[in-house]
Image 1 (cartoon, helix red, strand yellow):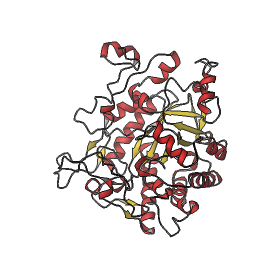
Image 2 (cartoon, one colour):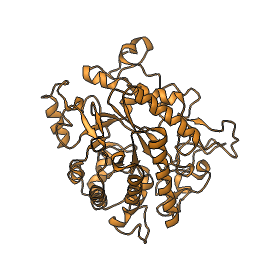
Image 3 (cartoon, one colour):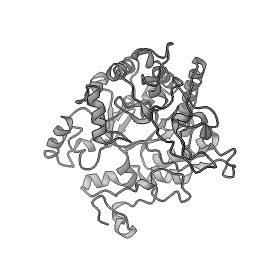
Image 4 (tube, one colour):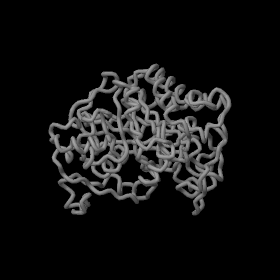
Length: 426
């Protein structure tokens, strides 16, 4: 229904008058965005290895951002625009992939400070997304056992994207089941989140932090009934499965202030084998408690029908099996009321017009087309076509890190650079 309304409204709304280009206040009034298109958090694996000469028997496990990463974010910065960083692991144990710069080592903190400065110099804002992969990793990469809410292996044959160091063969997640976090271990994860948030805001200068609470990573592993089979205070009911996420958010708010804290959620997600039931009961309770306890900067949801590894038909079958074939985000918007609400998942220059006027969202987060089109805001204003993206260059590490990263042209340079537009022309 929402999509139909958006399409109908798009014919009635001109580009200059679109709510997309109207201001939006977040951070409880501390920050005013000049427009409502946000750079979605995107894993790019472009960090440099702290120990480039490490042998396969003891591989490098710490990556840091440099001036190339700063250039990438600066290219996508607009005056008063908001960027959300790629997911930043608070520790080596949290990191799900090689090439991802964390925020737990002094060199990482120095690199992210450079990134933030580059964004601020152009008048933009940037939030750091805090990412704990949990069981969505392998011990060969983290250097220790993977962790989760419970010792629940993957139920699928999904392969880890990168062969273990020193090998050329991918491995299955389920062959490396996680260890269940003890209560003491849970507290350690929360402490790591807090240290990362303080480093981000107080040392690097990020304007705030967003907890990655979705996509089947550690927070959602606690929320998902098929993964979290605990019988203690952290599992066994929708309310108890929310306890970890609520404690993390309490700690982040205490550490850096609720005006600098946000959360991303995927209540209908399937990624990383998240197949839990009681979706509305679990995420509904979580959202009600977050709203009751905190005045967050914003909340960030992924659309119900958007999925990273499943087709639309496949996702619709899952929703139908849950009796949620008409699922949308309005249920959660109604819970959060006046808390600014972001939507991500499948937005493009074709379907954004009229979406904000419908009233369910306050801003739209765009990933792949923002990745490929550094001047996307200008092109949206003028009705210019966007750059086509090269999917093969989404995820590094690569020796030629700039290709498919910082070499996407602005519109005036498309023809001279040989870049391709979405419509296929150059």
